[in-house]
Length: 383
Length: 75
Ligand SMILES: Cc1ncc(COP(=O)(O)O)c(C=O)c1O
Image 1 (tube, protein in one colour):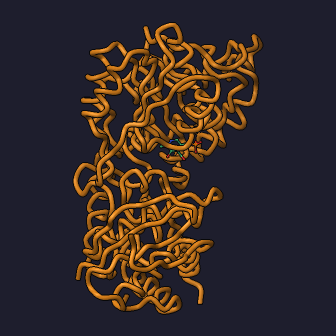
Image 2 (cartoon, protein in one colour):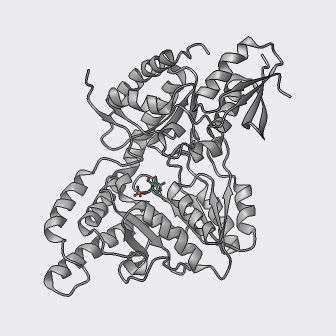
């Protein structure tokens, strides 16, 4: 039996915005030349790149020369962390970060520790919200070069107290890096950061475009081999058609963001309420109020996460999971672990501009039966 | 010391949690059951199960048999 597909994994990659598609096609004709050269075709490419940078800067509320386009959100995060540490190595070699950062940030931290640096992870509470007291203590310690805080959890949606965390950093003169991949193009950005990264395929842009913004006056030094392009912050030629499409779709997404947030938050609330009531032995995780509008996560007791993903896929639903069984490392999600919530049977549902109420209704109608079926197969009913 | 031990080594989550949940109603209230489980997810999931089911999680120990988790049946 084939069901029409319902894509509910926007937090991994949102379907491309129609504006991105149009801009991409136009830029393939017009923006293939190297913007660094001096002939006519290159000047046209340069204009497109400049316009993309201006538009992106405007949406982020920064200056154009503070923005660089990178090959992904991951490389942007690597650059943000390693560059922020390099720029302040005379002050110290400690990176303070939340326990729930994206793996891109944690892997950069591992690299730093491997090179003799220090990293201090700050815990979160059961709802996935940063422990501000522990954070303030951590950034006050001697030798802190950089602090890193995700604006909102990509796994459970909890919005972080960035303004308060930034104030604690400012007191100590520690620059704050925010990974805003799940916020840009969806919700207003917090204030107080020195470095920000984002990723275009999260807002409806093409995959393979990241954004790295470094505020003027921040002591940030490129961790990569020298290259003049993109303000010297990220090496290599940019994928200009994709960057043009990313910028165009960011503008479009930001213009609709408030209305979309209201629409999607109501659907997310419906998922939170109905799943808790209609699926037995389920733990809906993350902050019920201070949360992203488009993302909701829950864990089903006694259910194998990978089996649940496959069963949902067979019914046409594409979702993501933080369960250990689906990751190559066989570790439970470090985010769920840090929160102390059930890590198996985990499902993350994330919505986008094409998600309809009917899609969500069909998911909610089918989910209880799918979970019950898996529990019956595993012989765990009534446990 | 635990009153009994369930060996779930080599099993992936949620199997250790399921094994604990199966055993719990069969033992008298007050019994301490130790779950041996080397899947790292058990460190999160066994305490979370105790919280959801109102059983008492006594803590984890890392002995010669690897990571172990002690649970007391409270009701
Ligand atoms: C919070 C967060 N940071 C960074 C990234 C990495 O972005 P990209 O997929 O563009 O490498 C992602 C996406 O996986 C993310 O959700």
